[in-house]
Length: 125
Image (tube, rainbow, N blue to C red; front, top):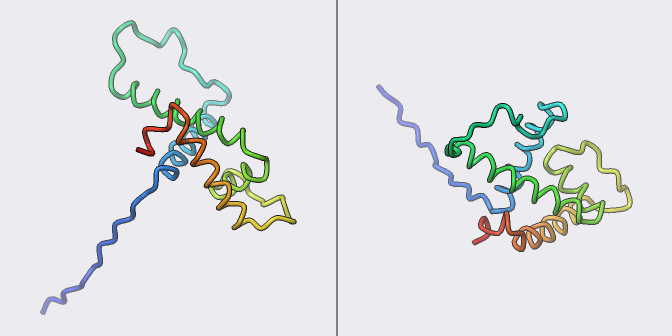
């Protein structure tokens, strides 16, 4: 006798801010593996047209750099809240502030800034 199990299918919609933050996190990890060498060597580049992987990589880099710039433009406690949420920062260093409330404010302000940025506005269409 075969038992039939019912498995629910759950579709999770990612919002554009989460997609941008995922790209930024991947860029953060990649940068830490390069040990300070952030750009490709000029000797390794070819004169041929860029392939699709190089194009997508450059678009992801532009997106991640835009997220980094927008985070740097936020007040320090809001920047720290986003970094704490993403696991980049380990400790919430602002004891007088409520992390949950600051995170909501930080996400709202960051989303507003990313909607206006030329490198990330296409995610929010």
